[in-house]
Image (cartoon, rainbow, N blue to C red; front, side, top):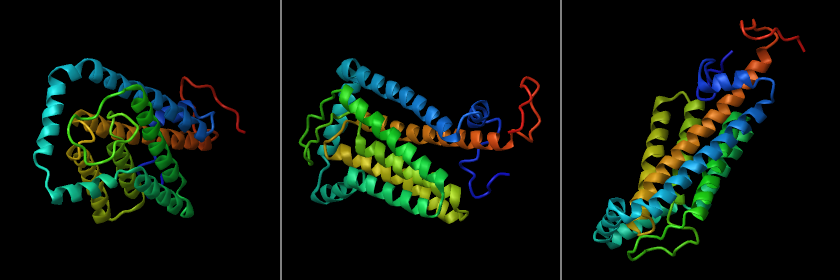
Length: 263
């Protein structure tokens, strides 16, 4: 039976996750989820690194590079003491201590309540985003905007924006967790608003403060969103495999599948 309080993580049998789980039902759910997560890691890393290399070696020397420079100068020309302060706070929302701290607290709270699917989903999301970000930052050596910067320069390159990608992964992931556990329309709406608004504010703040190009932030918005979607697919695939394992002795076999012995 489906868990009504868990709509985000219980896939339909004909969904991609449902099909993956059914085909891999002989494996442990954790192994199924890990396999999907690892495949997603490879695909996402290749895509993000590939675009970064294209950006640095080709696009940056043409119209895209000129657009990035123009956007950076536009933000510099609109700096004020008040905006400098507010963007500092917004930028800090995407910093590693804040993101990791919120994620750890959320995972501990979910673990205490024994919401293990949600814990696994958040861990899968944050690790996927971080590993892809770190890989791209190491392999794509893009210089930061040639404008006065308001923050100290971190050791990683400009591409992609770790603050932005981590913010998207964290808050979008938490919004899905809230959606899976809470029935209140108001709470769900607030969670989705936060998940959309906060990462955008972080991304804008990083550009305003001269730390990233526009294309760095745009790519990071996609990276964070993709990490959430792939982690959700991995989690749902594991759940589907678990349900298929539990029901394999009572389910009627498909026409193209051999009848399995009851264990």
